[in-house]
Amino acid sequence: MRRMIGMMSLFTAAVTIVCMTGCHASLDSGSYSYDQWTVRGPVFQAGPEGAFDDVAVKDPSIVFYKGRYHLFYTSKQKITDRKYRTALGYVSAQTLEGLNQARRYEMAEILGKEFIAPQVFYFEPHKLWYLVGHIKVTSGTDLAPVYSTNPDIENVYGWSAPELIRTGKTRDEFWIDFWVICDDTNAHFFYSNQKGAVLRMQCPIETFPAGLAEAAEEEAFVISGQDEKGYWRMFEAQHVYRVKKTNTYFMLAECAYRRGEGTNPYPLDSRKRFVIGLEADRLEGPWRRIEREENEYWAQSKSLRREDGGRCRYTQVSHPEIIRAGYNQRLEIEDLNAVQMIFQSFDASDTPPDYHYDRLPWELAIMKNK
Image (tube, rainbow, N blue to C red):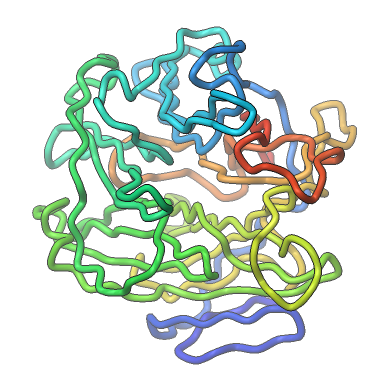
């Protein structure tokens, strides 16, 4: 059963979805392959003790340009048993397997500021590469979207000092994981509030990024559900792409189960993350779930297999980035039945319920559905 996300709440036995963008006819996009993913890797792991990424590597964003993969990622470094540092890293290699042995760059030394959860793309109207991410703006958890530009991605020292992305946001609530994708006329700016909602703004492509200061914020959708494992909700890392084969848009949305028992939906459990898929014919929406049944998910641990067919050791699928067909602001992929993603995960089978988030040993691997 397919689900459209309409103007009002849609209740089923398992899932609640609310959308604020209208309702179109269901897209006849066919049956997609997500029941089994072949995993290889890890292709990129934490660095040696004392390195800026010696605990974890996560939040990958990647492009293939001039015969090389360019990977930007969030790093975790141990300072003391109680103190950890979060930063931005960069690495480049001719093959995905070559990334782990390539030289690693700590981008804070280049940018002059901490900058994490990156997205990279080439913005053709400006003839510039863009890095979009966020910085902390207080000593607490408040975040702000920022960008840096570079005329040549192969020049790691060519990135500009980060600048704030000023927006028309009026809600006084947390936001995270900023994502830009453009169609022919507009630049669309997506993000999450970690409460189950994906939100969106847009501005004319010729005014990006300054035009977002005049943009109105709207709720693309809110989604949560419950299955045999418990309550879950959309969490973060909403990544959006244009599918060339169907001329539609596809969104990966990371979800997580509740951590612990009881009625409180927080906190969510980083040991138990998975990804749902949504599609739309326009970036303005409406968005609908792509899975055939309510309790099926685009990518989850039980659907991961090693290349030899054995069960994969990873216990979650988190923050995946599809390896794109190109590298510009359209964020195009060829076909949803031939997807290759780089994602973060680890084996959490021995991780206790009272885990320390900054100690989680994230690494990056490749998964594909064909």
